[in-house]
Image (cartoon, rainbow, N blue to C red; front, side, top):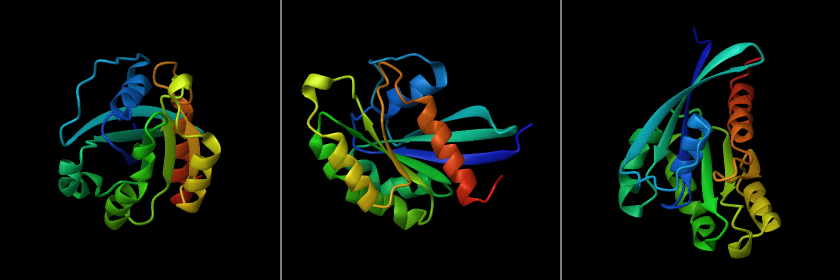
Length: 173
């Protein structure tokens, strides 16, 4: 039986790796052949933190601009979120304001993480950690992290950090 239930939305431009990130978290496997998300998909994950049973409902939101008008109905009720961008595509980070506008107009005060994806693509990297971290601070993200769904770096940790941030926001001890 669960003690708490949290709705988490994962958002960012199409192709940044949101679906593979979620798939890696849920199954421990990397599948580079996942198809593009249409609208939104959701998944459930059960975990234990500090002796509490937590259920996460994880919403994978489509990244294409033509879906942004329907996103508020999927974001509504979220207790936390993750903005993802691709370190090989600066444009995916430059769109942070448009994404934050959609999310924060729907759920104003929830903890949000900023995650850089595809950090295993070292030779193709165009966004440096320090500039992304500075932007995350300036945009009031709860935290910044870097992940790779392919290698599994910072997958479990990101979800645990976000869950703990939600617990902190809700004053759950």
